[in-house]
Length: 212
Image (cartoon, rainbow, N blue to C red):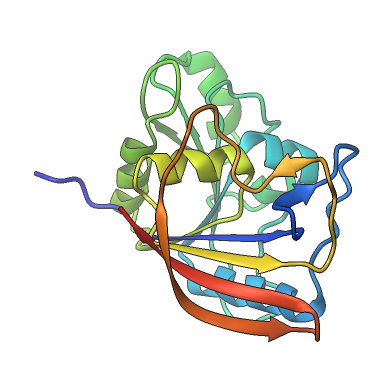
């Protein structure tokens, strides 16, 4: 039997040369209309997912503020359990989820569960993303938004778990920095354009379906 998973949309805003941040961490790439799209997608989603590095660096709330709708579950993938349980995304008990590996100790897990954070264990050594998304589906998540970072997006695309890729291209070039999709091996995926929209007079929002 094939495990079910949520319908998954990756949302990211990048420079013209495919970067989401400079080497020094500058990442202010969105314009107002792009922020509004981001928050409308959060309101649509049952859960919003980020990687551990993004959670630690940005400490995002992942809440809905520029659109009408409820706040989704806030999910972080963290094989090493390195994210602090005091992050903003965990500020509301019962709204935070951490996905880690099956070989983490109960003592380390309890640091999170004692604060009302749900824990999913999937895979040994590294997180099994397919099992992780199946576990989210079992929790009632039918619509999943992914907000990065590049390693998380790469892993989901590699494992065939992304249904749509929403990219906003900002009119700026970084030259160096953090890639929007960052992996350690070649990844060949075909895309087909579903829609194109110009934002704020210079940003371009592209919505792609994925060909596997």
